[in-house]
Image (cartoon, rainbow, N blue to C red; front, top):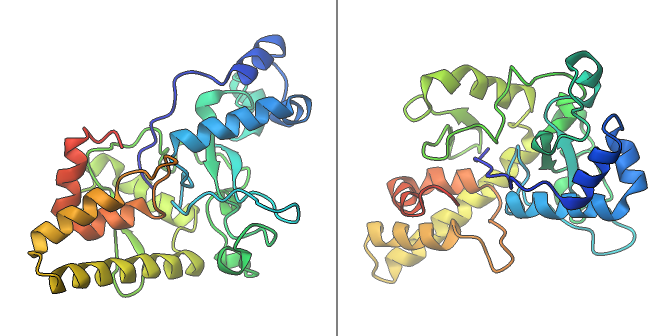
Length: 259
Protein backbone atom coordinates (compact mmCIF):
# COMPACT_ATOMS: atom_id res chain seq x y z
CA UNK A 1 0.00 0.00 0.00
CA UNK A 2 1.36 3.41 -1.04
CA UNK A 3 0.22 6.91 -0.33
CA UNK A 4 -2.46 8.16 -2.72
CA UNK A 5 -2.62 11.83 -3.58
CA UNK A 6 -6.26 12.21 -4.52
CA UNK A 7 -7.39 15.06 -6.74
CA UNK A 8 -9.18 17.72 -4.72
CA UNK A 9 -11.37 18.50 -7.73
CA UNK A 10 -14.50 16.34 -7.66
CA UNK A 11 -15.30 14.88 -11.10
CA UNK A 12 -17.85 17.21 -12.69
CA UNK A 13 -20.66 14.71 -13.31
CA UNK A 14 -20.39 13.30 -9.78
CA UNK A 15 -20.48 16.80 -8.30
CA UNK A 16 -23.57 17.76 -10.32
CA UNK A 17 -25.35 14.51 -9.47
CA UNK A 18 -24.61 14.82 -5.75
CA UNK A 19 -25.86 18.38 -5.74
CA UNK A 20 -29.10 17.47 -7.52
CA UNK A 21 -29.66 14.20 -5.63
CA UNK A 22 -27.78 14.49 -2.30
CA UNK A 23 -29.42 11.40 -0.80
CA UNK A 24 -29.06 9.08 -3.78
CA UNK A 25 -27.01 5.90 -3.89
CA UNK A 26 -23.85 5.00 -5.76
CA UNK A 27 -25.76 2.35 -7.70
CA UNK A 28 -28.24 4.93 -8.98
CA UNK A 29 -25.39 7.24 -9.98
CA UNK A 30 -23.79 4.43 -11.98
CA UNK A 31 -27.03 3.64 -13.77
CA UNK A 32 -28.16 7.21 -14.39
CA UNK A 33 -24.81 8.71 -15.32
CA UNK A 34 -22.73 6.26 -17.33
CA UNK A 35 -20.56 9.12 -18.50
CA UNK A 36 -20.12 10.26 -14.91
CA UNK A 37 -19.11 6.77 -13.79
CA UNK A 38 -16.45 6.61 -16.50
CA UNK A 39 -15.25 10.08 -15.49
CA UNK A 40 -14.87 8.95 -11.86
CA UNK A 41 -12.92 5.85 -12.85
CA UNK A 42 -10.68 7.84 -15.17
CA UNK A 43 -9.76 10.31 -12.41
CA UNK A 44 -9.20 7.53 -9.86
CA UNK A 45 -6.93 5.72 -12.32
CA UNK A 46 -4.95 8.93 -12.83
CA UNK A 47 -4.69 9.68 -9.10
CA UNK A 48 -3.54 6.14 -8.28
CA UNK A 49 -1.23 5.88 -11.30
CA UNK A 50 -2.95 2.69 -12.41
CA UNK A 51 -2.44 0.70 -9.19
CA UNK A 52 -4.95 -1.00 -6.90
CA UNK A 53 -5.22 1.12 -3.75
CA UNK A 54 -4.72 -1.91 -1.51
CA UNK A 55 -2.50 -4.59 -3.08
CA UNK A 56 -0.76 -2.46 -5.78
CA UNK A 57 -1.43 -4.86 -8.63
CA UNK A 58 -1.94 -2.94 -11.86
CA UNK A 59 -5.50 -2.02 -12.71
CA UNK A 60 -6.40 -3.66 -16.01
CA UNK A 61 -8.95 -2.35 -18.48
CA UNK A 62 -10.85 -4.84 -20.63
CA UNK A 63 -9.75 -4.90 -24.26
CA UNK A 64 -12.39 -7.31 -25.54
CA UNK A 65 -16.16 -7.52 -25.14
CA UNK A 66 -15.80 -10.85 -23.36
CA UNK A 67 -13.68 -9.35 -20.58
CA UNK A 68 -14.46 -6.88 -17.82
CA UNK A 69 -12.17 -4.34 -16.19
CA UNK A 70 -10.09 -5.60 -13.28
CA UNK A 71 -10.98 -2.28 -11.67
CA UNK A 72 -13.89 -1.21 -9.56
CA UNK A 73 -14.69 1.67 -7.24
CA UNK A 74 -14.36 0.78 -3.58
CA UNK A 75 -15.95 2.85 -0.81
CA UNK A 76 -13.56 2.93 2.13
CA UNK A 77 -16.35 3.78 4.56
CA UNK A 78 -19.15 1.29 3.81
CA UNK A 79 -22.03 2.77 1.85
CA UNK A 80 -24.37 1.12 4.35
CA UNK A 81 -23.06 3.40 7.09
CA UNK A 82 -24.77 6.37 5.42
CA UNK A 83 -27.99 6.03 7.42
CA UNK A 84 -26.23 5.86 10.79
CA UNK A 85 -23.52 8.47 10.20
CA UNK A 86 -25.64 11.18 8.59
CA UNK A 87 -23.12 11.52 5.76
CA UNK A 88 -23.80 10.11 2.32
CA UNK A 89 -20.75 7.88 1.87
CA UNK A 90 -22.20 6.70 -1.47
CA UNK A 91 -21.36 9.95 -3.25
CA UNK A 92 -18.42 11.25 -1.21
CA UNK A 93 -15.45 11.69 -3.56
CA UNK A 94 -12.95 11.30 -0.71
CA UNK A 95 -14.49 7.91 0.09
CA UNK A 96 -13.76 6.43 -3.34
CA UNK A 97 -10.73 4.28 -4.15
CA UNK A 98 -9.88 2.18 -7.16
CA UNK A 99 -9.25 -1.49 -6.46
CA UNK A 100 -8.86 -4.73 -8.36
CA UNK A 101 -11.37 -7.57 -8.08
CA UNK A 102 -9.14 -9.26 -5.53
CA UNK A 103 -8.83 -12.47 -7.53
CA UNK A 104 -12.58 -13.08 -7.50
CA UNK A 105 -13.46 -12.40 -11.14
CA UNK A 106 -12.51 -14.93 -13.80
CA UNK A 107 -13.47 -12.76 -16.79
CA UNK A 108 -10.85 -10.04 -16.29
CA UNK A 109 -7.86 -9.67 -18.63
CA UNK A 110 -5.01 -12.08 -17.77
CA UNK A 111 -7.44 -14.10 -15.66
CA UNK A 112 -5.10 -17.09 -15.63
CA UNK A 113 -2.72 -14.91 -13.62
CA UNK A 114 -5.18 -12.77 -11.66
CA UNK A 115 -8.10 -15.07 -10.85
CA UNK A 116 -8.16 -17.73 -8.14
CA UNK A 117 -10.88 -20.29 -7.54
CA UNK A 118 -9.90 -20.45 -3.87
CA UNK A 119 -11.89 -18.19 -1.57
CA UNK A 120 -8.97 -17.92 0.85
CA UNK A 121 -6.90 -16.49 -2.02
CA UNK A 122 -9.12 -13.42 -2.39
CA UNK A 123 -7.86 -10.03 -1.27
CA UNK A 124 -8.50 -6.30 -1.03
CA UNK A 125 -12.17 -5.33 -0.69
CA UNK A 126 -13.42 -8.92 -1.11
CA UNK A 127 -12.66 -10.05 2.47
CA UNK A 128 -13.51 -6.53 3.65
CA UNK A 129 -17.02 -6.85 2.27
CA UNK A 130 -19.47 -4.39 3.76
CA UNK A 131 -17.80 -4.27 7.16
CA UNK A 132 -16.84 -0.92 8.61
CA UNK A 133 -13.07 -1.19 9.02
CA UNK A 134 -12.45 2.53 8.70
CA UNK A 135 -11.08 2.72 12.26
CA UNK A 136 -9.26 -0.62 12.00
CA UNK A 137 -7.20 -0.50 8.80
CA UNK A 138 -5.09 2.11 7.04
CA UNK A 139 -6.66 4.49 4.58
CA UNK A 140 -4.16 4.95 1.71
CA UNK A 141 -5.23 8.59 1.48
CA UNK A 142 -4.03 9.23 5.02
CA UNK A 143 -0.74 7.38 5.31
CA UNK A 144 2.63 9.19 5.11
CA UNK A 145 4.49 9.23 1.81
CA UNK A 146 7.90 9.97 3.27
CA UNK A 147 8.28 6.72 5.19
CA UNK A 148 7.84 3.11 4.12
CA UNK A 149 5.45 1.14 6.32
CA UNK A 150 5.97 -2.37 4.95
CA UNK A 151 8.74 -4.74 3.99
CA UNK A 152 8.74 -8.19 2.35
CA UNK A 153 10.28 -11.60 2.85
CA UNK A 154 12.56 -12.07 -0.12
CA UNK A 155 12.13 -15.82 -0.63
CA UNK A 156 8.34 -15.96 -0.02
CA UNK A 157 6.94 -12.61 -1.11
CA UNK A 158 5.22 -12.26 2.26
CA UNK A 159 4.29 -8.73 3.31
CA UNK A 160 5.02 -7.63 6.88
CA UNK A 161 5.07 -4.36 8.78
CA UNK A 162 8.57 -2.92 9.05
CA UNK A 163 9.04 -1.86 12.70
CA UNK A 164 12.21 0.04 11.77
CA UNK A 165 10.47 2.44 9.39
CA UNK A 166 6.77 2.32 10.27
CA UNK A 167 5.83 5.04 12.79
CA UNK A 168 4.54 3.57 16.03
CA UNK A 169 1.11 5.18 15.65
CA UNK A 170 0.55 3.23 12.42
CA UNK A 171 1.81 -0.18 13.61
CA UNK A 172 -1.48 -1.64 14.79
CA UNK A 173 -3.49 -0.51 11.77
CA UNK A 174 -0.72 -1.63 9.40
CA UNK A 175 -0.85 -5.16 10.81
CA UNK A 176 -4.65 -5.09 10.72
CA UNK A 177 -4.55 -4.01 7.08
CA UNK A 178 -2.48 -7.01 6.02
CA UNK A 179 -4.77 -9.40 7.90
CA UNK A 180 -8.18 -7.90 7.11
CA UNK A 181 -7.48 -7.36 3.39
CA UNK A 182 -5.66 -10.70 3.07
CA UNK A 183 -2.66 -9.01 1.48
CA UNK A 184 -0.64 -12.18 1.94
CA UNK A 185 -2.94 -14.22 -0.25
CA UNK A 186 -0.93 -16.87 -2.07
CA UNK A 187 -1.80 -15.24 -5.40
CA UNK A 188 -0.24 -11.93 -4.30
CA UNK A 189 2.84 -13.54 -2.81
CA UNK A 190 3.43 -15.33 -6.10
CA UNK A 191 3.21 -12.05 -8.00
CA UNK A 192 5.58 -10.28 -5.62
CA UNK A 193 8.15 -13.03 -6.03
CA UNK A 194 8.16 -12.40 -9.78
CA UNK A 195 8.89 -8.71 -9.14
CA UNK A 196 11.71 -9.60 -6.75
CA UNK A 197 13.19 -12.05 -9.26
CA UNK A 198 13.16 -9.38 -11.97
CA UNK A 199 14.88 -6.91 -9.65
CA UNK A 200 17.58 -9.45 -8.80
CA UNK A 201 18.16 -10.09 -12.49
CA UNK A 202 18.33 -6.36 -13.32
CA UNK A 203 20.91 -5.81 -10.59
CA UNK A 204 23.02 -8.73 -11.80
CA UNK A 205 22.90 -7.40 -15.35
CA UNK A 206 24.01 -3.97 -14.19
CA UNK A 207 26.91 -5.37 -12.21
CA UNK A 208 28.01 -7.49 -15.18
CA UNK A 209 28.04 -4.32 -17.28
CA UNK A 210 30.56 -2.83 -14.86
CA UNK A 211 28.28 -0.61 -12.80
CA UNK A 212 28.93 -0.13 -9.11
CA UNK A 213 26.11 -1.47 -6.94
CA UNK A 214 25.06 1.98 -5.73
CA UNK A 215 24.93 3.36 -9.27
CA UNK A 216 22.96 0.32 -10.40
CA UNK A 217 20.39 0.75 -7.63
CA UNK A 218 20.05 4.47 -8.34
CA UNK A 219 19.41 3.84 -12.02
CA UNK A 220 16.80 1.20 -11.22
CA UNK A 221 15.09 3.50 -8.72
CA UNK A 222 14.79 6.27 -11.28
CA UNK A 223 13.61 3.88 -13.99
CA UNK A 224 11.20 1.76 -11.98
CA UNK A 225 9.67 4.31 -9.60
CA UNK A 226 8.75 6.81 -12.30
CA UNK A 227 5.35 6.66 -14.04
CA UNK A 228 5.37 5.49 -17.66
CA UNK A 229 4.17 7.60 -20.59
CA UNK A 230 0.56 6.86 -19.61
CA UNK A 231 1.14 7.94 -16.03
CA UNK A 232 1.04 4.41 -14.63
CA UNK A 233 3.44 2.85 -12.13
CA UNK A 234 4.79 -0.64 -12.36
CA UNK A 235 2.88 -3.13 -10.19
CA UNK A 236 3.92 -3.48 -6.54
CA UNK A 237 5.51 -0.06 -6.18
CA UNK A 238 6.23 -0.61 -2.48
CA UNK A 239 7.99 -3.92 -3.14
CA UNK A 240 10.31 -2.12 -5.55
CA UNK A 241 10.81 0.71 -3.08
CA UNK A 242 11.72 -1.72 -0.29
CA UNK A 243 14.06 -3.84 -2.43
CA UNK A 244 16.04 -0.87 -3.74
CA UNK A 245 16.47 0.49 -0.22
CA UNK A 246 18.28 3.80 0.35
CA UNK A 247 18.59 4.40 -3.41
CA UNK A 248 14.79 4.38 -3.68
CA UNK A 249 14.36 6.68 -0.68
CA UNK A 250 16.93 9.08 -2.10
CA UNK A 251 15.13 9.21 -5.45
CA UNK A 252 11.69 9.62 -3.88
CA UNK A 253 12.96 12.36 -1.58
CA UNK A 254 14.08 14.36 -4.64
CA UNK A 255 10.47 14.32 -5.82
CA UNK A 256 9.27 15.48 -2.43
CA UNK A 257 7.59 12.05 -2.09
CA UNK A 258 4.87 13.29 -4.44
CA UNK A 259 5.18 10.41 -6.89
